[in-house]
Image (cartoon, rainbow, N blue to C red):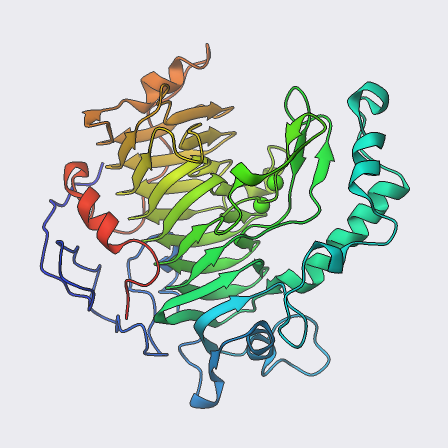
Length: 443
Ligand code: CA
Ligand code: CA
């Protein structure tokens, strides 16, 4: 295993308030000034930089640097420079500074749109719950005119709130309080995207679908992640904050005997996405944090889903921080906290799914829960985990996983990171991550 490079707290290199120690940034080769449109990821910064740092729109000329304040302005900037007649967002290099709050669920005049604006005339929640009552409908998949009307309603919402992001794009929050809410960024089948210093809240699905077969008694499943990385390569998500915002799950109503769920993931990385770095983000107050690989059956994901997660704070996230299938995922120096009595209960942190190959090193788990099962087995069979602390005590992931299966769990993986990270000792990271992770820390 690579040598641990010792923790060395240094005085702030960034322009944040200097109240707590800060980590040195990886290299000083590129500008870290958030308002510089030409800044890029640093070399050597995890899987995202494997083929060279993510540059996003850094090559854009001045005419393709935008400052946007509304959904319409954002969509216009994302489309600018598109090849005539092409579908989807532009792949021309562009830097889009996000200024203030952008509500994605609005009309062309920036007036808020809500459930009734999207709902199909043939859809009705009480009729839906009546039709799909397990006593009469049973466990078969939902279908028929009412389900079709739900789907039309959902499609109408999606056409407004899901915003496709093209290749060679930088999305950067400015002013310390950039916020994108009530929708989802879809980074689909593109390359070279950086997203920094933005808060994302409440990717709310007004029309969740009933799945009678999910878990023992059926579940409501919703569609939108705050950010979805779908089949894309070379993406850097850094210093952002992700949460459910104004609509936490505790206010959700119950239907068909189950609490309804209106949110999906915070950052999901799926469908052959590859070479992704997720760093210095604050994930908080949410159920399903980050799915890496979304189906056991998707064997095409093998060899892809290479993701590095470092210096993130998973703060009262119930589960999936991340849950991995197939991917070669490196999670180092992340902080996990769960507070007893928080709005979101604690399930688990790291999900070891089918054919996953996680390297998990020097993370801190401060979990105030009756069962601090931080590693959960989901058909995986190997993990390399070293230097992790659970409530101040070294935790052995393999021992914990082995209690969950009678099959052997191996304590190694078949790869080593092809980059040289600065990995700090776990007992040194908590205060610095709390001070540095999330949006609004970079100016
Ligand atoms: Ca889902
Ligand atoms: Ca998702």
